[in-house]
Length: 420
Ligand code: ZN
Image (cartoon, rainbow, N blue to C red; front, side, top):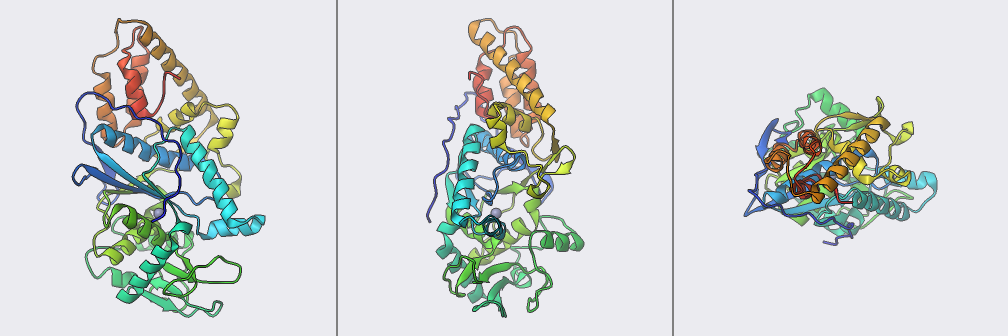
């Protein structure tokens, strides 16, 4: 499977002291549970961006949440196999390309480059597998063929195309114990129906066996990019893209499937249903979701013109470490609002921490609490409690002679370089 280039990953120092096993809230069970490993390896899949817009703070918050997880797992001596996709074959991207008269591949490439730049600036550890959908269409097409053969995929008459669209039979997929509709999201039937439509679903489409059946393969239409497949020329649906990339890069099942909270349904449930139908294994037991970020009271969205872009903030001279600290001051599961005043507060905090780091390296004397490092590591290992960790660093920075050992801890755990 073809991988694409990631971004320059920061060095993560390996801390001395006892490793702390990592626990993480599981959306499916609604409990904080240990992250399962197999032979010391955790396999993490995080849904990537649809590259038609620069990274806004909401995206950055999601990738920072799971960067904190990756960093915690590394300190727990867990080897992390981390896969992320780029959804560059998707309706919103094609619509934007058409509307702005730009080649879709150029749009995807330029926006992916911006994202890479943002991630590098924010010191996010790069995934081990970074995969563009456009590079792996043959693998996805093959999986659609498998689903058709197994009878969980079916075609629907599509007069506007030369071929036929392929849908996924949710009822057939639920016959085993590998997928249970609404079981992870805990959505009511009304919420399932509403969210399905919100994310481009077509419950009314004639010929579907059930309203919530998702699209697996869209037959080629005029003016849309298309590829060959066992179902004819066309392009894949959104969920099967992630199902194939996740299972081909990480194996039939993953330790944690993660992403923004808005992906619970249909995307994450459908991805799991597709993956299970392809491999005959349960895709995962553990789902993690990051909260959503609004802008001063309203949802951040391109159409409202209120996106806070990481690249714009850094261009305006804001320190990426301060942006990182603004995000980490919120627990990753919280839905929160961006206010510029928070960035100013984080900038001041960063200055205080850097001044403390300077004092720490200039004196042998130590007046900060001796167990700050262990407490910070324990806070993070308990469902990534970054606000608590920040509180502990604030206490460290408030004393006259802080312990210099904490500089490395802040770098390794919170991803903030205080020497800079
Ligand atoms: Zn995904």
